[in-house]
Length: 74
Image (tube, rainbow, N blue to C red; front, side, top):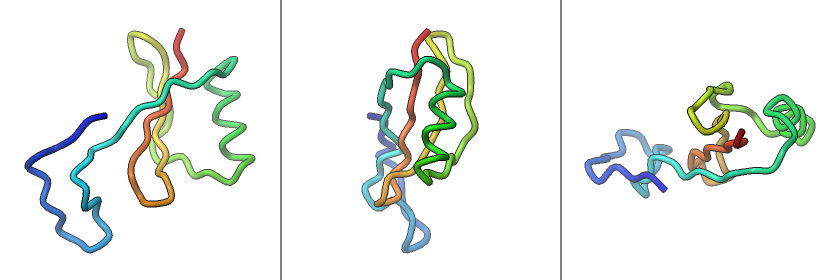
């Protein structure tokens, strides 16, 4: 979990908890399979996949608006 203690919401719909995001490692054959499953489930992808040294991740938002990073490890 990543937090920003200096966070100060400027709009009512900003994240009031001050949490930047949290990350979950998911099991998926590929990041493309994960993207397909999310889109089929109606989940909007907030940030397209990004390669990282230990896998590939993307961002979605949970129902409360918190950013969630999903990572598929290599």
